[in-house]
Every structure is written in structure tokens, then in C-alpha cells.
Length: 228
Image 1 (cartoon, rainbow, N blue to C red):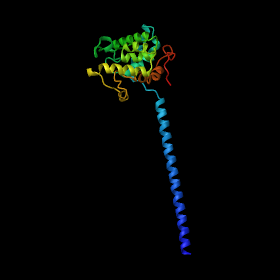
Image 2: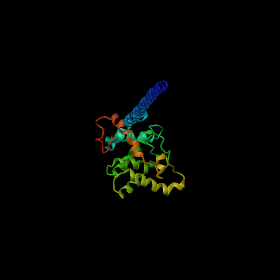
Image 3: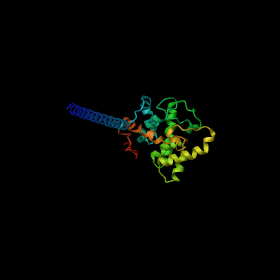
Image 4: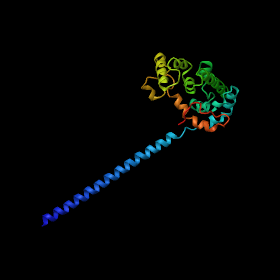
């Protein structure tokens, strides 16, 4: 009788232990799933929030609008603001980083208004050469006009693949100069260290915020730039 009683107690204990373990494992599984979903939702919300402009960039908006209006291109105000944000965040005496395209060397511009003037001149110039392909114009602002010819010889429109291929080609030509190195670790995998192969995406991350700052009179009808 004692043996049977002990066996029954043991069975009850084992069942209780197994049940407790199963419940604990289930609760842990649910918590893990909840944490994963919470992280996913947070990442999605973060990715959906556009990068904001600095106050410095916003302060230059009147100058940007004025120079663009003189050229009949005021519809590109948001694009230029986003471009400036990527180039400098509005900091320094050359917020458009236009010295190299203007005089062939870094640091020759010491007046922000001259920087905006020359930067816009260069952007409008490449925009016209790209027949209005804004993404190609933006990447050419970073790569130089040689990228326009390269694209025209390889399909005619901007693609990320062509940006990588051009960067890789130019880096192979110029890497022995020691003047170029990858500014992004992602580009190292492609050995594409000439310029910034993700420049268009970087500028576009600021575009929604820039667009929200512009008035209806200068807003662009999306000009082929998807913001979603």
C-alpha cells in the first residue's frame, strides 16, 4: 500500500512539474514573439519617419528659392534643401560643397551665398543634361558629369546598379592615387569607393521633410521622386 501511495504521489508531482514547465515554456515563447513583433513595429515606424532638416538648412531656404527662381527652377527648392542637408547639414561657409565643381579644388568658396549660387548652377546644369532625370542629376552632383555619359551609354536612366558599376570603374582607375576610400562599409563589398553609391537614397531620406517646408508655389509635383 505504501508503495502504491508513493507511486501516485510521484506521478502527481511529475505531472505538476511537466505542466509547470510547459506553461513556463509557453509564456517564454509568447514573450519572445511579442518582443520580436514590438521591435519590428518600432523599426517600421522609425523607417517611415523622414530625416529632419537642420535649422541651418531651413534658414537658407529664402536664398535657395531666390536663386532657383532666377533660373526658373523654383520647383526644385525641396530637392536643393535635401541635397544641402546631405552635403553639409547647412554647416560651414560652403554648405553646398560646391568648391570642387566651381574651381576644381576644395575650400575655394568662403561665402555661403556664393556656395548656394554655384551649387544650384551646377545642379541645374546636370539636370538639363539628364533631360530632367532628378536621380541621375543628384548622383551626378556627387560623381561628376562623367556619370551622365556613362548612364547614357548604358540604358539612359539612373539605376543603383549603374551607380555601383561606375563607382567601381572609377575607383579602379584612381585608387592608386590614395585620394579615395570607402565612405560606407556597404560599398566595400562592391569595391565601389569612388563617391557615394548611396547618395541618391541619402538625399531622398531628407526630401519629405524638405517638401513639407516649401510652399505650394514651389512644391514639385513629385518630379518622379517616390517618397514612400
